[in-house]
Length: 426
Image (tube, rainbow, N blue to C red; front, side, top):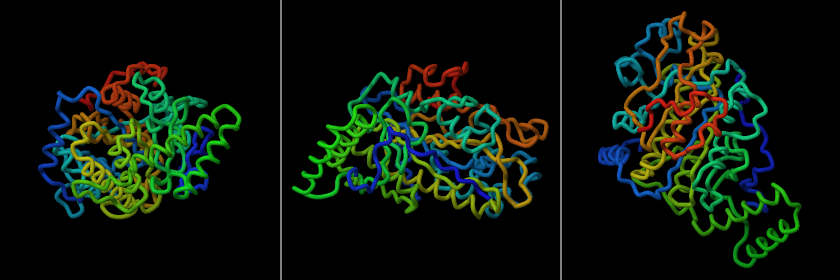
């Protein structure tokens, strides 16, 4: 049975809950793609432009082998007689990228970005830790300390705490959802917002003023510490949202977001960016990737999740248009799936997977990292895609080259290869 891969309960630094009483085309214009590709390579950018990283966590361990199909590796079809995505040119076949790899057909909306050079892919990426526990692997990936339990904060929080440019805004780190992800928990303030429409204080006019006064009075007399500090920051966020009114920013360039929770999360992140509230780190979850039974090939359970992912990412990039030169989207998952399908036409917990990088100064249009092949002798423990790129190498390069981080050894402690880079970001 698929297991529940939701994040752990929210800690005391999570201070926003949507809905509470007190706190409240798939078709792409070629002109847009040309402008976006040019913007990605421009070196004459204004010095104070806000750079933003959006992290999308595919919780449950996405099958990277069916997401980014190694159709040029014969072992892929030998080991997956029922669930392999057909080769390019066949009915429901993979969309060829470079003669060896292809996109799952459900990700067709992303193909123009790959061809325009604004979408890059890293294959055989993951954690050096061998665990196949969703909860441990997610924890290790979000803390940035694989194999080490008990790390108090997340790697995104450490970045925000160490960043030289501390903007005076409570919106530097924002997760769309009911709880703060492990990656954003720590000393740096961060917000969890379930719904921008519901976020804020209820009431209008004098009624709203009375609620605000009561809210401020309540926390003015509260005990000092994280709860009081977090509540004050939350109240400031409420007031800033009312002034900025992100919801007035409607999708641009004909973008059509899926009506799914993920699609709406990406829409709200775009609204926050366009409202210019100082968003530096955005975070969205997309679950449902634990495909032990009836995974499907070109159609089916996995395809439905990939269709949601591709449509949401495409709408986001289309909506932001030329702003994508300053916004980078990273997809991640705790580990991959077994090379061989199981007896239930699904896959079990594996090791290496694939991640995607969209926008920013991505060196796209290529597959990054070293492909270890699916030969039995090259597999991890004889059954899984081997990891040839430590996820911290990719994450560190993004922080350094996109967000300008200079404290990588503090963000990823005890990682000797930090800063070595892959060449994913130009």
